Length: 187
Image (cartoon, rainbow, N blue to C red; front, top):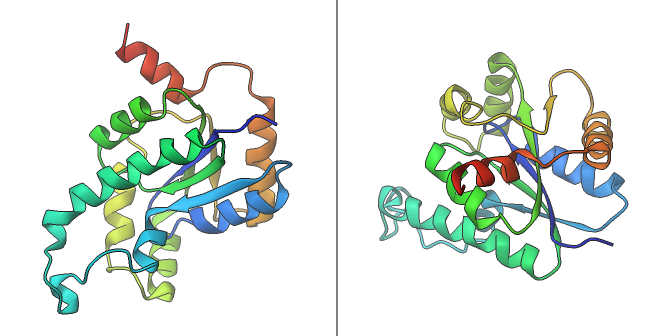
């Protein structure tokens, strides 16, 4: 078994990344951890924000939070764990930070797409997102790089998409997008 492999799901909020990650975990022939920044929030690792009656301002802590999240990924992979990363890469600088941090690992970069109308419908149903967050993410999240594979979560079940991602991951023949970006930046 090759450990420290990463399947990196990138897409807007409410696109179905977490659901897809769980479906991949169920189908793939190796153990993979599912890691998402939302899990840190749900675990109540952060102190209460101003909006929650707490002492810290999210706009101040947010950059540090994501730097910490990004840095935990190579730590997990470096401990010989396979990882499915579930993320919204909102800034080009984040992509290149992740490319550099994850350079020692086999990263398979997957774009998770979903039409705006469906994203907004899911966002309303979830009730745990700020209205408009998915729209804002959709405008930038897929603009920084190509992908090794893509899925549109509005057209099939998570199980079908998981099988497609796993098949593409097993069938790849060339260096992935992350490795190509790293190589082009560090020549």
